[in-house]
Every structure is written in structure tokens, then in C-alpha cells.
Image 1 (cartoon, rainbow over the protein chains, first blue to last red):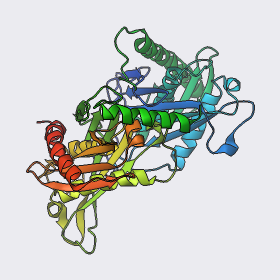
Image 2: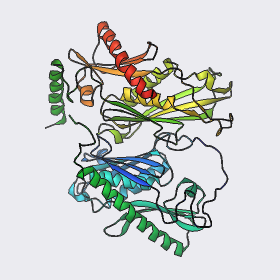
Image 3: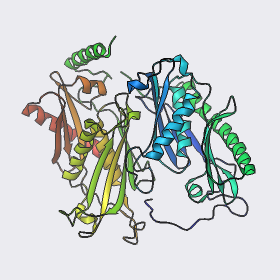
Image 4: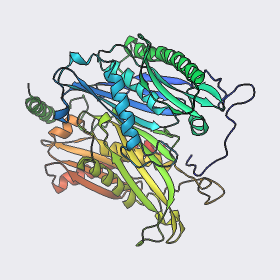
Length: 252
Length: 260
């Protein structure tokens, strides 16, 4: 809590192949998804993934603001990925920095690749992602949350977009890095998959990977995405299959 | 039907309901929605709380960092509040620089916290004129179903009352200690709907309102801040009535925010 200054490099991988939190190289952190977590949004989802807490809301299809971005033959996707000031150890200045703007752009492009945009010409589907507590992999958690929120909003899509980061920790390819692994690791590669087609609609990479390592990382990431996909579908089933009252409360 | 027409019909409906002592969501004029405050929601913060009023949701995170005192108050710590009305929380909010509405929320909460002497700023000073704790109170609106000021204040109070001063990380002392909180202000907001004055307004009630009044009270019976907003007016007797009601609702909400 509130730690500052550099720390010694921790032991990232024990000789018997256990990571800093006891996971194996191919294991995900615990993932919990709540579809329909907000009342005002057209669709929403809350993702708790390891120590990440990410809220996503979807509005639309609705009028395009600013107007000049409007497209006559399809909907556009606008995304705002933002980190709360208190989401990280050292307080972040509120507002969108360059990193957030870049992430917003690649996420918007990923979703525009997956939704049936031509169904809603001259509209915007607005995707808002708020990182409330960050512990590496927040953009992936954001994509997962936003996918479920889009489905919750009833936006037609090719598929949900499970997303995860693969990295390199102590020379080994590892799934779903947590903060210490990300800080001291040798590579980080976030991706988002369209499970139906097996194609990636988001892919970024930073660090050092050999060609065999990259192949291994892609396989591991796709396998991880397929696990996450099941959790996402279950979250939507839980939201809509229950006989209980609508969790979003009474609407006027 | 255009939004303007719908809004006008809804406003008329809300005013008609209020005349017969009723409201859109079935509450009475003096019924507050259910309030919850969850402490420690965000572990990356030094103190945090998620406050809900019905479906309105505000998350507050407190961060404590070392900084320089202001030149005119060399012996005092620094308290900074900020509210973000992010577009995630309502179809009414758009991205961009802070809207005056956001500035109002953060300033009204700031005023209550400061005026109530919630935290003793002089105790936050480490070296006079040089080093002091800076207490950042960041309020993040997640779901805006009306009455943001009260929800933001509850979240801020909840976050402050359970905040920990990170002495070890900043090499100020050997132990992390709880932030000393001396007073517990809560705000309570009312709007006028015709002749009726209703507590804890919904978004549509805020839109229909002919004036809004927020009253901040502390635990020892003081009124520590007030803010009149929106277009409309209150008579002195209205204000007195509102203050009485603000203490009743405030005392209940205060206990929830403190977690006692």
C-alpha cells in the first residue's frame, strides 16, 4: 500500500516452476465477472481479476459526438480507457495520458472488428472502461469487461472477445502476468481473441521474445483466452438465466 | 417523441405525484433510499470506500503522499479533493474537461470535510515549511441515479475514516498508523418539487426540481456546510425544516459511513 522507491527483484520463478503467487506458468489468476453491474448504462460489467478491479459500461448505439466522426454506412466504436487516480501505488494524475489514449484506440478498433457495425449507420457505440484497482493486465481486463458489457447492452457481435496478456518471466513464457512479473519480466504481450474464428483483434507486444518463444506465447495466450471465454459466457448466463429480481434495481 | 417533450411530460408527472405525497419510485417525500458503504474496496488506495444510495454508486480513494506545505500555511498539511463525473456513469456525461457540475460536487464535499475539521491538518505536517502529508481525496462516480453530492460525501467520509498513513513507505515513521479522523460530516440533499420538499432526489427529480439544498451536518449537532443549487428558491422556514430533516437522515447515514 502506497509503496515508493525501487525494491529488490523478487524471486519470480522457483526451481519447481512456481510463480510469485504460487501459480504454474499456464495458470490464470482468479477471474470473477459480474454482468450488469451498473444501473444507468445500457450494458455493463465488473471484472475482478487477480488484484485488478475494472468496470465497463456501454452506451448506444446512440448519436455520434462529436458529429463529424459520424459514418453514413456504419456505427463507430468510441472507447475511453481510464485509470482512477487511486488505482495504482503512486497516485496517478486524473485524466487521459498518452498511454490511456493509445489503449483506448486499440480497444475501440478491436471491438469495431467484432460488432456488426453496418447494422447501425450514423451511430456510436460508446465503451467506457474504468480501472479502479490496477495490477498488470488492466487493458485485457478492460476488454473482457467491455465485451460482456456490449453483450449485456444487446449489441450484435461476431463473438465475445476474451483477452489476456502473456509474458516472459525468468526466461519462461507465462500466462497472465501480475504486477511484479510485469515490472521485472522480460516481455509482455496482451491479446484479444475472436474464439469463433480463432483470430486476434488486439495484439501488442513489448520486450524480447525469440521466434519459438513467440509461437509458444501465442499458443498459451489463445488457450488462456478460451478459458476466459467460458467465464464470460457463464457471467452472461448468470445475469439472464436467474429467476431472481433484476440486480440493477427499480427503474422509474 | 423528442427528448424535450418527454422531459416535460415527466416533469409534470413528478410534480403531480409530489402534490399527493408520492414519488416516481414509490418512496414517500422524506424517504431516503437504502445506503451502504463498503470500506477498503480498493487496496491500491490508502483508504477507500464504495458508497451506494439506491443504485447511485460513488467510489472514493484516499491517497497520502509527501509534499510541500503551502507557503501561507507552513505548519499545515494539504487536503485536495477531486470528483470525476466520468461518462461511464451516466448517459448525460461526456468526456472532456471537468464539467461545472463535477467541480460543484467536489467543492461541496471539500467544504464539508474542511469545515467540519474532519482531519486535523496541522497533525499532517512533518517538517514545517518543508515536508507534509498531502491527502488526496478522489471521488469516482460509477453510477449516477441522482444525489451525487450525498453519495460522494459518504464515500469520502468512509474512505477517510479507514485510511492508513503509510509512514513506512515514505520513511516518516516506523509504523503505519490510522489517519486521525476527528469529525464525521455527512451531507443531505433535498429538492423542491412544487410545494413539496423531497429528500435524496432521483435524476429525473433533479431535472424537474425548482431548487436544491444540501446541508452538511457533523456528529455533535453543527451545520458545517450548505449549498443551494439549481434554479429555484427556499424560504427561511423551508431551510429550517430542511436542516432538521438533514440531521435525522444525516445521523443514520453517518453511522453507516463510519461503519459503527
